[in-house]
Length: 341
Image 1: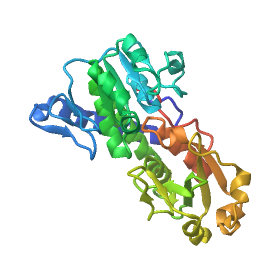
Image 2: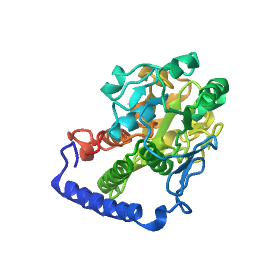
Image 3: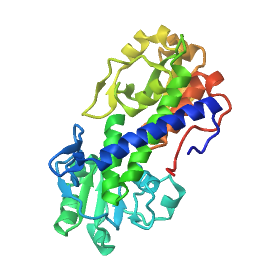
């Protein structure tokens, strides 16, 4: 089931959990709860209603009668998840900044900044976007819709919404059972990580930087904080409030420094959103009063494995665990399941 080497006891425990979860999910799939009049998945901003209706984050309603076969994905997480669901030929286009999986780099590239005619020329039956495109490029979206192309806008902000998001992608692609298996594997792996860390009597306290230049962190319900806490870390910014309904929160230097003596580890995401360096953080005025900075406990982690709603969030958990508790996460291979069997 897994593509990594784990202690035998932990492997047995996780496999048992997977089998139990799959059995429960199959009961859900095969019972009348999937009748058209019953909601089977609910989220704050998007959901599945009845047997085959999707409501996206813009309020669009789409009834799925058969799997879509010519899909353009305009967000890296959509692309990664579609491949993880087992699609390939059905994906006829991807966004400009794809990095994973390697197969995505071979696909034709599309952008919402381009002439919609480029999209129309390849005759997609579905374009999957995210809310930022809906808000920022309404004319582009409207042109595609006027020409009969289905649009779905999705971007989950937390792990519970991520499960529903995977179910929606499974419904769109005809891979519902595979989506359920992704969920069961993810939940079982999370239980495995918690097994490693729940018994620890002393846990590391962490400030998790999202954007250094603006002194921003992550909201307590974000995927990044979920990864941190699943790895056994304690988030010191529990009072962080979201900015514009995102999972990013302005925290400010004053509040960071107020926790200075409590912070055992200074963790920063690294990527397009944030490009921190050790020197930048060490030389930030006032930061030498932070315990972690003074002791050199500053670490960086790829934003793609802590902020995106994909199975690689497990790799993010594992890598954070290695930082916090190397004795527990030691030399084992990354505990990620990037492909569902």
